[in-house]
Image (spheres, rainbow, N blue to C red):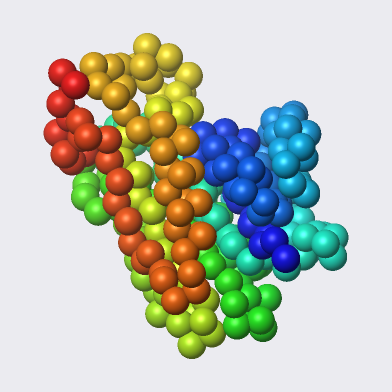
Length: 251
């Protein structure tokens, strides 16, 4: 029987690429996002390969998270794999001039949203004593860079939550792990720079960044390991990147 994976932030970037590779490898999917047109388009495309159900909600909306996940039809109600992918960076300002709205968006999405979705799914995993949770972090979970303040703090929180989840859920045989990507060419920078495409493009100028498909390949590898293998914490960067502040732009 194929496993069912629930992916948040499935309408773009890493989430979308992960949905595609899992669909092609016979995983049943629950794809979640807040853009209905993109959800519908993705569901139609993936239905060629597997069974797909879509849930429309913003992970920051606590009531919507629990309402939508509790509405899953029986055929999709058992979630074997939870991929906490939704999250974003907003702004790149020093702490003294940062926008409180940006801070709230990052804290609500990257931390609270991850917690809401996990809270909605974990009880059924505990009942079955089976399940796998993948938390998508960032190299910003491992280091802090200038003007990254609150974003880095939220991803440090993801790192801590990942470790705490793994400890708390260990008695129930639930696997928990995190994947921390470096520079990935997705809509991430467009969101961070609020649609300033020139600034967004400059982030990846002069080198070959990771692609969403690179991280999706890794996620597929992680979730397809045998039960006794748990990849607990994985950092991946493009070859040109040595740290958040060191990038060889001649590659």
